[in-house]
Figure 1 (cartoon, one colour):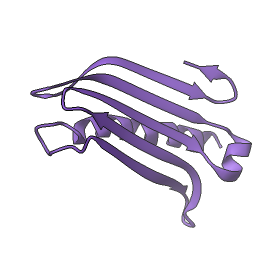
Figure 2 (figure 1 turned 135 degrees about the vertical axis):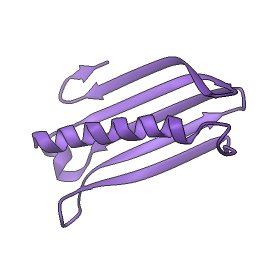
Figure 3 (figure 1 turned 135 degrees about the horizontal axis):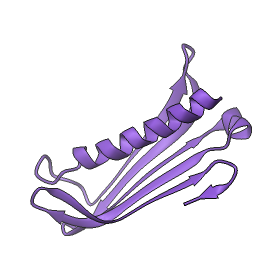
Figure 4 (figure 1 turned 120 degrees about the vertical axis):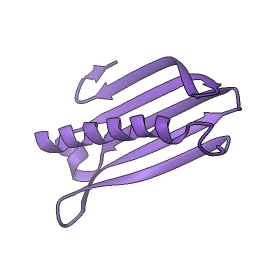
Length: 112
């Protein structure tokens, strides 16, 4: 179970970092709102162990991004894990300039 927990946290951090890189204003036009949902699976059978949701909102001047991941199904019962990253800031010529960033985790006890 510890490997799955580490895997899910690493996956969430991976997508959180890549969401910033993929959404740079100079690279492609962005819709005002976008949401991507991932199913996280493990092993040869592709057993679903978690899910991840990436969201982006912007008005052309300011943005807010949210990345949320959690274990699901039986894995939630065995090892409840949730992690949410939120970034808010300005859209500038080179991409995003964060003004706020927060990480909230739940793993049987709340941590912020």
